[in-house]
Length: 244
Image (cartoon, rainbow, N blue to C red; front, top):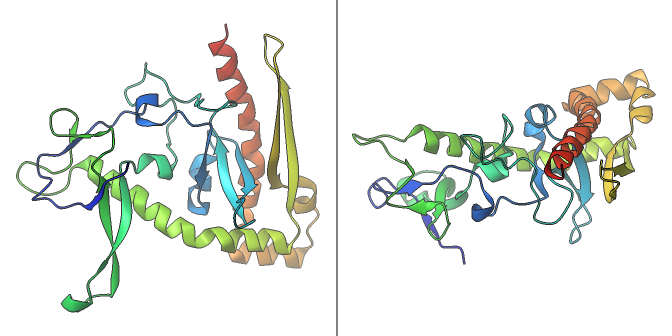
């Protein structure tokens, strides 16, 4: 059960966080959502796919981390962080923090201002071992600064999601994709229910449409999303290493 409270440097001055990623912290997930402002970093290491939210029927950007339930092929106990990639998706990197909104109108500020909350019941949170959140003589630790950056990226990226997909859908660029492959041991996989950018349709856009997509800020994202699909082979290689 989550226990979210407003973070402050008095009440939580001695609080520490286990910064490593692991199954014990719930990081053994096969996919996670990402945001448009992460695409440039994400595409270097992960395959980016789209899925439809079953409740809203709207598109969401996701990355594949594994091929089975509770499988994250990027978890690696031999690395310092527990994660075998340079960039960790913001929705995971921000744990155990989240954005809350505080009424500051009484102080003359914006009525609702974003503030950092922490899940006190998170398996990462303790007062004995781990990385401190606040420096001994005041100020935020680098870990907290990094987590705040991830929260900011999520907040800003969430505002771009529907805008990006509207731009793609207007030009009919989104198409279903089925991913099929066979592991070295002969085991076959088929990933269904995903979507991507049509390379053919993107290449055949006329000048006016290309300019419009570029002006929207998502032309580069479209090309990067297509390029990211090649990272499926990276996951297949990681999976094959597990079954050797």
